[in-house]
Image (cartoon, rainbow, N blue to C red):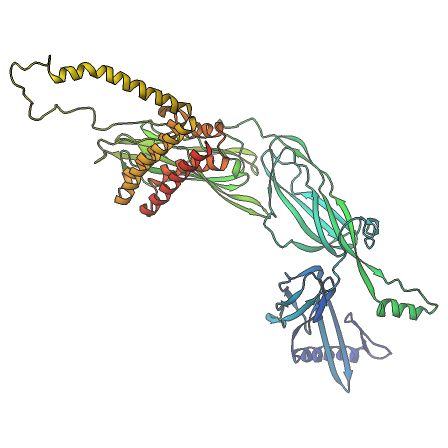
Length: 630
């Protein structure tokens, strides 16, 4: 009886087959018992000292049937190949004693890239439901000859023809070749190789005319690697690029090929001169002199893709449809349904689903005419994974009722094209009943809206009191003519005219200096309004603080750029800053401060901290804008 590596028993000789079968059963039982008696150990082994640029093997071996191999962290070395799995088994029968051994190994081919002493953490495997860990390894990398530079024209670089297109190529694939316009499709670029790869770089990105694209592997540190068999040949496959794409028009759209440079490593025989002894040549070439690794640079291109994009059907298209395609849900909520006039409330409109959320426009909400509504603040919570783009987009509206009463916010709708069902769908929110009570303690104040418009409303100031107090009387027969007051009044027009000429001349001189006028006006805004806001901040009066800070910012924009208060808005403010060529970052910061001033007034949390931050922002943007305009 003989036993080979393929676990096939071979019996030599003639005779009754029954004893042979019984022998097989006995041997199998003895083998199982012998296997249970072994001490299982996962052992890691590698060279203790290597040079920079050297390639070496890292082997994890275990003397049992193993599965679920968990690789160690190999961040300090370049992984050229692996892990490759191999197994072997053997059995001996000596003096009726059966000895069986099983060996599993997981092998990496690594390359040292920098000097230092590095530790390879333990790997782990699963044997019959029990986890075994290997020993850690410490490898010292010393100074040596680094790999040759990866540039054309080097004497040690082999021509690209040494690696055929069957050994190394890149392939592009798409999960759907006939999508709807706006539907999410995923394009994956995979590199297939039968040789170790030292490095690669994309030299030409694929042409994506007509698509809005999101990179799905932008933040990925570890490439998804696996093995795949094509035409009987096994390849190591890695996904090097994956994009979520949304077609912006219909028709046949072409995705141009991706180009990349790959530095691969091939084995070369040593250049020793051969002898007449075949065994001698084989021994010294393969065992003594060994093989050398050489770098080969090759440029490869992916295949071109053509996607036939179907237009969205015109039949049954809702009026409020804006191009959203996919599968979505909506959620609409308010933070309160009862408040006082001139208080604020917020309404959130959230769209959740899978698709191109960043291109979804704000919903067409209808509010009562007594409500002052600001442009929504948009918050995106986008999840980018290898399977595509999903998440939510929230539109938050700030609403200020101006008059008491009972009001209704009508249901809002959102329409999209359901890709799976192939039909348009419309989602509707619920209706909100808002009760607005009469405001208390707000008489004699005014509020200003600064996002879309600026409306001033005085409350309780339309009736003035009659002047009261003691009347001042004068003696009888007292005349003004001839008195000192008469002569002073007579000379006053002349003196005032002379004073007017002097002041007017100085004013003309000052107005000729435009930079001085701008500085004087900006200083006045900062001194009068922001200083008053600082006073209210120290007193803890946040109501007047927000009003003074808002007036300081909007008053500055109105006075500085000669824009009427009634037409001043975020858009006109941004256009004025851009027209004067204010730095884009500073312009965005000014607009952000205006927006924060309106939202911070009604935001929950620590008012003192919010007032301090907003005061610094307002003073900073006004001062920097003044300097920018000089």
